[in-house]
Image (cartoon, rainbow, N blue to C red; front, side):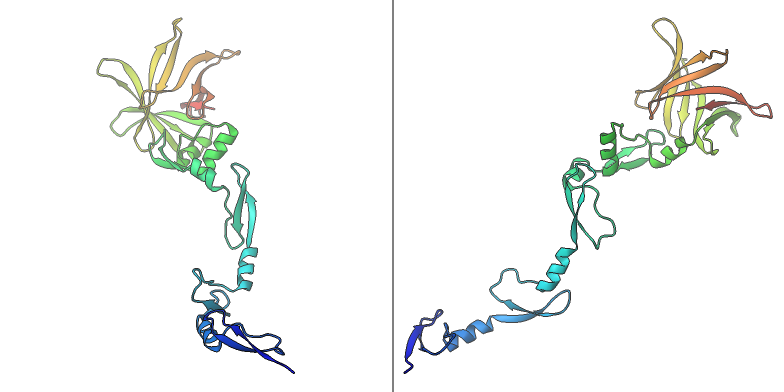
Length: 272
């Protein structure tokens, strides 16, 4: 014959009558069970709207259901950092996946600098800094607009006259775009020099005549801060043709300048 016995409620400790034939005997009394049930409430999933059961004691209740959470996690994948080669998390919903990890971006933060030619401010990006370091290049000294100007060679320097009748030497790229202007001047102490200005009128360099220790003449161009930008000297080719060889500049390369004549007889200087 079946028997009854008692069990203490797990919450309040009161006696609960239990029958031996019950497969799943209760662990809580009716009152405590109702109290526990009152702690639960429903919330809609932020993604699909499905109802979720939420307990009031949870410090961080979920905003999306389990199924939506799995779908979100499936959108994440890994890409390689272009700087250090490390792994970066990327999401399939992003239009452009990241190229650099946080450490690479922090150690190569964008730098605001002034263009060595026109003086305009520009930013050296994270990617440019990392690419320069990886390739052993120097950081760019010219802004994107000036780099585009200097990209189109050969350059052509023409002697022209201003509206006021002053002589000016204007240098154009192969597209006919003005790169710089040069004017001869005499300093307060009577020294002759040639001042170079960019498209904006800002002084980008001054050229002075100099001589080496052995007395060989050459020209030296310095920047507004006094640093040497380039040096040039007159030379003669194997065939007796005269030309000017210059070294340095923002690209730190060697250029050859020759005197050319147009079909109309106009002379100009061509730099390659």
